[in-house]
Length: 250
Image (tube, rainbow, N blue to C red):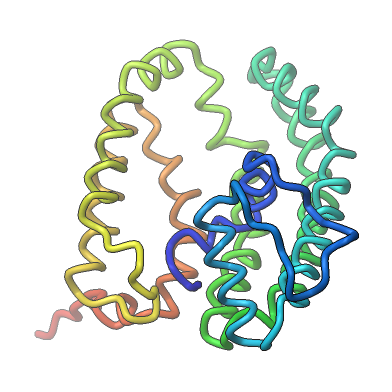
């Protein structure tokens, strides 16, 4: 389960379960009796991982319970999220300090909603696999700090109408960058088994996305993407393939 999709577990897992039309838990189900009718392939893979590593479905049911608690916790921030979206598009340079001073402190308690889900996954994953998920989650606070740095200097660029319009026009090209990577990538590949060719898929996607951002004068935004991605790649062979800076000798 240390594939690319697992790193997005805490962003999308609860939605995947809910969108399947499946209950988060079934009080009448025994640990080894789970009705998976209509469930997504991602959910089924996670069930298999939990059962293979623990011998029963009890661990997966524990994951579902944690996800349910996570959804409840996240829902408490709905008003904050709605206000943030409204205030962001009303923001000007004179008010951006107040905006980020108000909302950045909200990020920490929001992120704590995912702590229980992370812990519940531990029995379902092998140590190396769990480390990928843990590393991704632990990189998020640093990502938030970067986004909030200097009164949100990087994200404030997105409030500019000219840049917004450029970004909308370039969105199709950005999607194509992702599509190319998706077609090339083998999603059964374990992140820990990345080879040089697979590393290039990731770097090529980054360069493709950066080209579109550069065109809209949004180059700095790629640095927010870099924080979690570099953290994850640091656990793979891709880190070893990075070119070391050459030291000139005289």
